[in-house]
Image 1 (cartoon, rainbow, N blue to C red):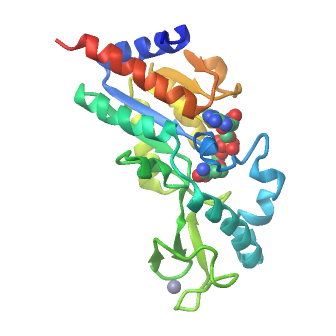
Image 2: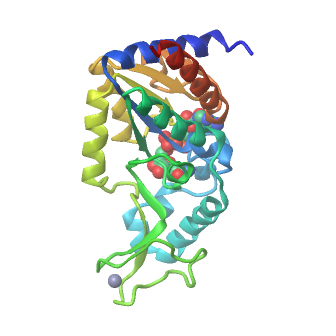
Amino acid sequence: MEAEPALRDTALALIERLRDRPVLAVSTGAGMSRESGIPTFRGEEGIWREYRAEDVATPQALYADPALAWEFHDHLRTVVAKADCNAGHIALARLEHLLAAHGITQILITQNIDRLHERAGSTGVIRLHGDIQRVVCTACDHVDDDFPIPAPVYPPMCACGALLRPDVVLFGEMLPETAIDAAFAAAASCGAMLVIGTSVQVQPAASLPWVARENEALLVEINPVETPLTPLVHYSLRSGAAQVLPQLLQQMSVLLSKNDP
Ligand code: NAD
Ligand code: ZN
């Protein structure tokens, strides 16, 4: 089957650019997991239409009404635990291996908290916003990677007596420093960046493509709708990640094999 011209052009441009600067950064947001059945935060059927962020996902809210904050997070934890990787997650994991075989490093940066990239086989994933399945103590260094879903009581408490919380970055909190440093280093050094399924509104992740662009990276956006980034990107693939990524992988695979000696 003949690929869409936009897709073929994008694959060609990516390969050309990555030959000179062999690092592909990939930045993913909630839209990446939409086709796995996990709702996004904004837009149609976004989670924020049911809950107000300031009521449930800030540090103030967590301490003011921990039971409500836990109910909200357990709603998302339940959805996430039942979700499977989609064809987009799998294509990105395969792309990492394909590129590696041609001397190109892929660095995956995600705002998602759902582990689906890791479950699909991507390695070294830089998680900017944490992991909702992991629960940590607000006082001691207790960590539980497989805390029961739903929590046994609202709110659950640590053996030390303090409140437990999901290991996610709440609105107004700092991002983990090592993750953000690694993400900005990738943005500054990559030859190209794929920006997938993010509304590009949550800082500092939203700055990554701008940093990449300042460093002359090729930008490709995959999103069914336009975003504030759209005017800045070189290629826009306006469809769902689970549709586009397997096709992009296929195109890149064909082109790279043609380049082989
Ligand atoms: P967002 O909710 O603000 O925006 C989602 C974007 O995805 C929108 O631009 C939308 O047009 C696009 N989109 C929708 N369906 C798509 C598809 N099939 N393919 C590609 N794109 C699609 O998401 P965001 O910018 O990532 O928001 C930030 C916060 O939401 C993050 O902090 C993240 O931690 C949190 N979040 C994570 C998950 C998850 O882990 N799956 C889910 C919801 C929210
Ligand atoms: Zn504790």
